[in-house]
Structures are given as structure tokens and as C-alpha cells.
Amino acid sequence: MKSSLVAVGLFALLLVVWLIAKKNGITMGRGADDVADIHHSGQGFETGDLFVELIFGYSDDGDRLRFMIIQTWPRSSTFEQRIADTRVVHAGIRPLVRHNDGTMRPVGIDGHVYLFDGEQLRMMRVKMNEHSDTHELTQVESIERMWAHLQQFRVADSE
Image 1 (cartoon, rainbow, N blue to C red):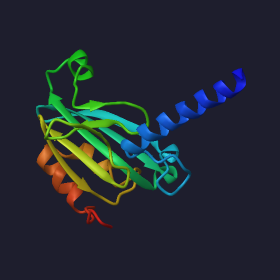
Image 2 (image 1 turned 180 degrees about the horizontal axis):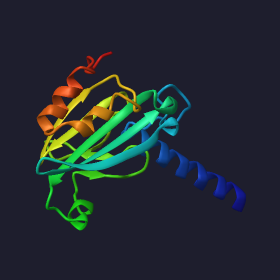
Image 3 (image 1 turned 30 degrees about the horizontal axis):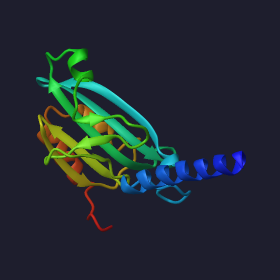
Image 4 (image 1 turned 120 degrees about the vertical axis):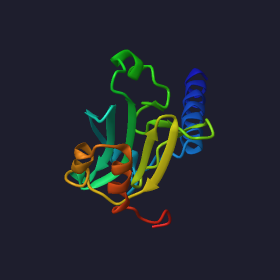
């Protein structure tokens, strides 16, 4: 009797985890868009009067960019201020991003770019690698030039 109650409890727990994952768009199987294949990298730098942080999610040894988050703060901001920022929550493999309507949603994992210009979020879908295609972002002097650089990699959302 006790073992069957444990089995029912475990099944219920797995069902709850599956339902939460499904609600948040997280793939549970091993497929082409499996989140288990996503790795992270990132870098921070100063440009103009801003401190910029780039966060990359990638797969296929960097040959496929799955997502990119670009956050900016005033150059004079402190580490503590940047850590306390609520626009992005690093919650596992798929960070949550605050959209312009105020809702927090997991990042898309098919080349989605999220660029915060202050509190305003801009989004697009791109086809890039994490190796060389992203390098020029650290060389530009403004957010506008970053956005312009990303335009050459833009793809239709349905692609």
C-alpha cells in the first residue's frame, strides 16, 4: 500500500512539472529545439555612456545562436544596481524577459534577440552563430548601431 502511494505521488509530481514546463513553452523531449542542448556565454563592456551586457544562448558548439539578451545601464551604474535589475531573471536554461506589457516570459530559443534600451524592449529573430557574427556588437558606439548590425541577420518569424 505504501509503495503504491509513493508511486502515485511521484506520478503527480512529474505531471505537475510537465504541466508547468508546457505552460512556459519548455520542451521536455530530445529534439532539434531541446533546451538541454543550449549553452550560455556572455560579456560586458562599456560603449559611449553605457555599460552593456550581452548574454548568449547557443547550441551546436556555437554554430547556432538560440537567443541573445542585450541589457544596458548608465556607465555610472554600480554592480549592485545591475544585479538588482528585474528586466531579466536568470531562471535556468531559458531566462525570463520582461516584455513591454510587464509580463515575464521565457526567451524564445530559435534565434530570438531581446534588446533593452532603458526599459523599452525591442525584439527580432535572427539567424547567427555565436562565434563571429556577434563579435562586432562589442565594437559599436551605440544601441542604435547594435540594432542596425543585427538587422543583416534578421529572418521572418515563421522561418
